[in-house]
Image 1 (tube, rainbow, N blue to C red):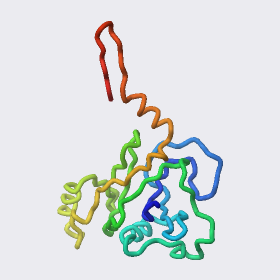
Image 2 (cartoon, rainbow, N blue to C red):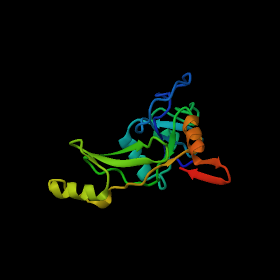
Image 3 (tube, helix red, strand yellow):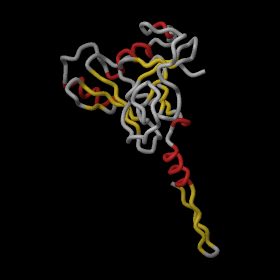
Image 4 (cartoon, rainbow, N blue to C red):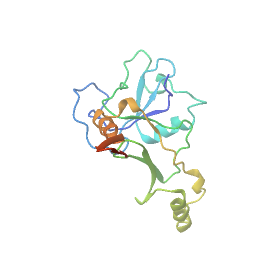
Length: 191
């Protein structure tokens, strides 16, 4: 059973929850759909906003997600979205604290699909990539009260390997080991 605090990363050809014909995957970016899995029926429900998702995630162990937490939704309704390889899915850390007020947590997928890099965006649009950058920013902005660098979590969500596009998997396995024969000498290269 999947953790109910999973999140969908928008790397697939479908940008809504309805079934659509498969399309070419756009270049990777950040998360475009948030979803939670019902603890009872295991159906996926799209969460309307990042803020609502963060509210669910920070208490998911104590307050598991059920379909009826969404207005006018029950376990009898079809799933909002299906777990499949039409997009890249990631699992966020359960009980991860909500982003402090005035900051937005952003995740960017690396080109090789190896990791999502988390960073925080301030209300003025500045990107902060480390706790040291956050500490400096907070020191430069004393008007921001009751927030410390320890309130920010840079844990990277787990990328679901079975949803990574085949083209990325093929490129990665082709680069693993190359053997070149040169007479009696052999050269092994790995990247």
